Amino acid sequence: MASINVAIVGTGFQAQYHAAAYAKLPEVELVACCDLVEDARNAFGRRFGCTPYASLTEMLQQRRDLDAISVVTPGALHYSNVMEILASPTPPKAILCEKPPALSIAEIEQMGSTAAAAGVTLAFAFFLAQDPSLRWLCANSDELLGPVYRASIIWRRSGGIPARPSLLAASAVGGAVLDLLGHLVTPLLMLLEAAKPAWVVANLYHAIGAQGGTEGKLDPALIQVEDAGDGRFLVLHAAGACLANFVIEWDAYIPHDMLSIEFEGDKGGATLELDHASSSLVPQLYRVVKVDGMALRLVTTLTQPAVTLDGLHDVEIAQLVRAVTTGQGVPHLVNAELAANVMRIVLGAYESDKLGDTRLL
Image (tube, rainbow, N blue to C red; front, side, top):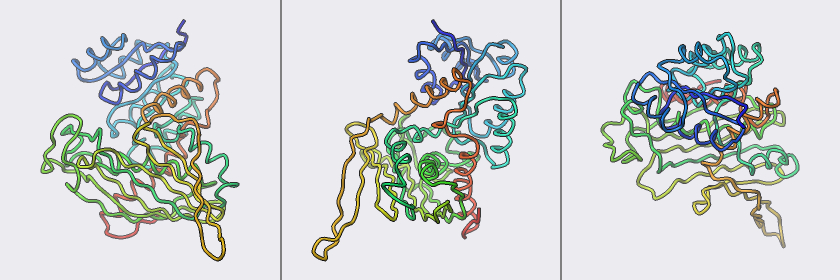
């Protein structure tokens, strides 16, 4: 029997992932949703068996029994949505906010401090943080990698490219870099102890690779936001510094996504690369040894439990529910402190491109 009541703010495409993940948990009941668009909220309510409300304010007034809330609205609304939830007379025990967390570091930090004061677990949906291979690597990085001094992160996204005009117009907050870079920065910052971003330099490009999307053919001339970006950033950490390179693209020309994360440390290196057959990240470890004066790279493919990229959304939701049931924060979730450091790099990339120079963080 369900004992945890949840609600979803926003009923667009991403909200369906949250609803489907909640539905897989027998102890959870999705009881409410809200959206300003009447047809959208009513259709969502019928599909997932929950009561639709015309606004977040109305939902919070009518439902005083919510244990967890997912915020799945456009990024520009995340700060005001989360702060309204936290200010309600009976705030939930946990909130999961989609990325981007907010549009400024100050907003993220205020969201975090307000949630902490209210005793609410606030997490942000950077789903790669839930990958079991990454978690295992983080737990064993001192032994396997040593101090990490270099990283490379690449995501060329061919599927699920946003095609809605509102996400591509000049008024949109950002494009491919806002969509993808934060997901890739998160694993690196998780791996580095006491990580502190120092600087970022980036270049953003327009109408380079995006030629289509999941919602139909997309004319590159309609793209008002960047569809590609590259650059590098420096992260200071407890054992030194790590220089990371990144390449981000929306590219419907390629047959499938290309996603890889590579770390290199004093003792060895590791890669997490997307396997298209399983749609999951496959980890490899490597060491360089000398045999008869020749440097050889020894590679070991690990057999960690695999979870598909879509399945990581389910893991994230399950962790949020765990926070509700235990009444404690869950280390697997991305908190406000980590989210703020992730967004320092992401937002700094936009500022660097605008300045045409390095952006100190």
